[in-house]
Length: 230
Image (cartoon, rainbow, N blue to C red; front, side, top):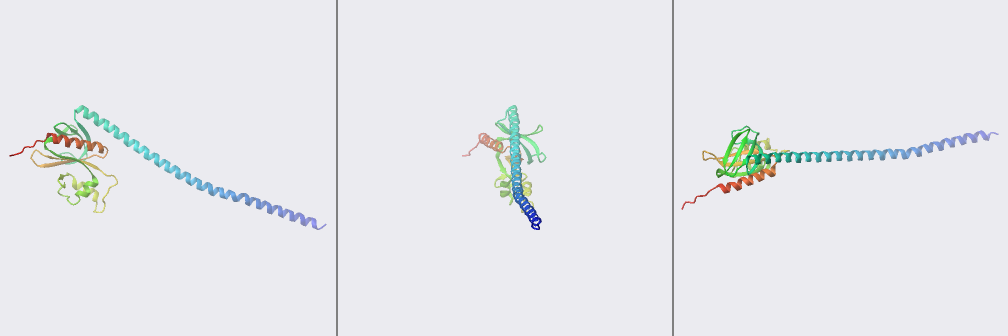
């Protein structure tokens, strides 16, 4: 008579214990799933960031290509309209009576180079041209840092050399800028019979700049005459 209540109490305790164990066994895989899902979400965020970053780079490259293509078409149009053999746009740095960063159109004809800034024109006869070169900022810095003041790199006269080298060197420790510049440099004999020069900046059409200088140098050789005294 007295054992029945004890058995029922014992059975109810066992049921409660089994129910508790069941809940623990249910919660345990849920915690694992939470951790797994958390790491999966982090991987997804990283993948999304890399995807967005790659898309941004592609978009920037496409914009640069389109801008360069549009610029080349405009320069080709100006070249055809002027009858020039070659043409390129650039910014004046130093050397002629123009402000720094004045935008210029450079035209190569069979006998001269014409520099045009808003219909203000400067001419360099090819028989007085001595050099037409393209130099990167780093090349100018490495070769010109010891001769600032003379504006010479070897035999090349570089107007604005002090500004270029000074801008890169800072207080003497900074050697490379985040955005390198590319310069077109002309050396010629001026109307007074003295060696002179002019420097231009062009960062968007480096291939065209090199081709322009090659054409200038080729036409220069064709226009120069040599007299031999016997």
